[in-house]
Amino acid sequence: MALGRALRHRTSRRLAADAGLLFCAAAFALPLAWVVLSSLDAHADLRVKVPDAVTLGNFDAVLKPDITFTPLLNSLVLCGGGTLLTVVCAALAAYPLSRFRSRLNRPFLLTILFATSLPITAIMVPVYALFVRVNLIDTTQGTVLFFAASQLPFAIWLMKNFMDGVPKELEEAAWTDGAGTLQSLVRVVLPLMGPGVAVVTVFSFVMMWGNFFVPFMLLLTPDQMPASVSINEFFGNRGMVVYGQLAAFSVVYSTPVIVLYVSVARRLGGGFALGGAVKG
Image (cartoon, rainbow, N blue to C red):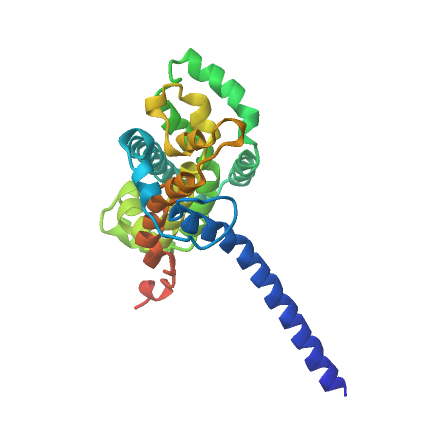
């Protein structure tokens, strides 16, 4: 009897967990289904429904230089430049935190952790005033710098955790062969922590790609606006929205992020089982 009750209790818990997971999956799947189906529907609305007749007219309407291609190019420049700067600076900052012990390491890491919790809206007013004074407002390089600065704290945390998994003995072997500190970082540590670099790259790029508020505040010229801001143009006055074109633009807008993730997915599954490399 006790065994039967235990089995029924375990089964009920498993069914409850499965139901919760299915509910969460549906919460994510329904919006995605709406985007895909509405992009192929000439009469799309807010309902999730199969199109009466599949059409590519929504894509033809949005695949124009001023609507899609120029904003996407602006997004690639901003987010690509910001991601590159974030990864480089995070690697250089995480290396001494991972390899050298100091009383200042923990306070510095706690300060970085605090910086990740600051809401972006709370610092935009002083940042805007600073950018006006140093002539960085309405410039691509200024937006790239702020993108990188906003993502750098968490990127340092991630990079350090991955870097801790690389045995220091491998660097010492490189030093014995005459390599310097920077050479050992570039040629030994970073190649061995490829999955960590991939995670930081994807995380930083995705966070920048979907950021609306920062470029909206720092860029003034319409031709410099990224796709995350130009998508606002599909929301017309008095609730008039062309849902089919909005969905088609959303599909195109999501493509670079999906391509980036797929291109690095193989590296995300890598491990750091390098202990055997220092033996023998």
